[in-house]
Amino acid sequence: MKMKEMLRSKSHITAALKSVLYWFCAIVYWEWLLHIVALGELRSQFAYVLGFSFVFGSGLALVTTFLKEKLRFIVETVLTVVMILLYGSQLVYYYVFATLYSVSQIQQGGAAVTSFWKETVVTMWEHLPSLLFLFLPLIVLCLLRKFCKTGAGKTNWLWRIVMILLAA
Image (cartoon, rainbow, N blue to C red; front, side, top):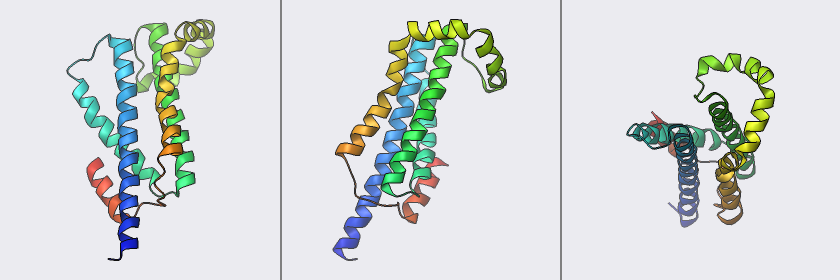
C-alpha cells in the first residue's frame, strides 16, 4: 500500500472513531443528566446505559459515515439538536409531572401540552440552567469541527462493516 493510501485510510479510521466516541459520550452525558435530575443518583442499572449508549452511538456514527465532511457535520448537528429536544422534553415532563414519560404516552403529549402549557413554560423558565446543560454536546461538536478536522471524506466500507458489527 502506498503511503498516501495508508494516510487516507488512517484518516477514515480516525473520523469513524471520533464519531463513535462523540455519540457515545453525548448519550452517556444526557443519560447521566437525566438520571441525576429524575432519580437524584446513579443506580447500578446505569451500566446498561453504557451499553445502550455504545450501540446507539455506533449506529448514529454509522449513519453519518456515508456523508462527506461538511454534510456530515450538518447531519450530526441536526441529530444532536433532535436528541437535545428529546432529552429536554423528558426533563420538562419530569419537572411538571414528577415522572418520566414512556413511548406510549407520546401520543398523548399534544393534549398535555395544550392543557398544561402555562405550567410547562413556567417550569422551563424555572429550570432553565439544567435545560441549558443539555446543549453541552452541541458546543463540543462545534468545537471539534473547528479545531479537530480529520480531512477525511466518507468512511470506507470496511470501517462501516466494523461499526455495524460493533453496534450489533
